[in-house]
Length: 101
Image (cartoon, rainbow, N blue to C red; front, side, top):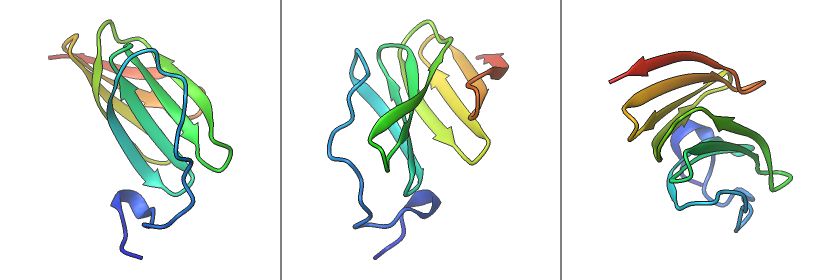
């Protein structure tokens, strides 16, 4: 299978539907075959365990829709229409950096 960003492969087992956001999903990032990060108009970012099909973390702190998300094995980086960029610890979900644009 052809590689996707971060190492996930086409054909890897990924749940068809994940439920949790209260607004439209505006951005997703699939760093590997086991995790997915999603950003939403509900001002939240969710980290999903794809093997279980469950949300394992909800990152709250933006004051408006989150339009971009990226993550690696340690951090999640998000951007919002509230004019901020935030860096979060993947484990624990603590915001460790907050930049106003």
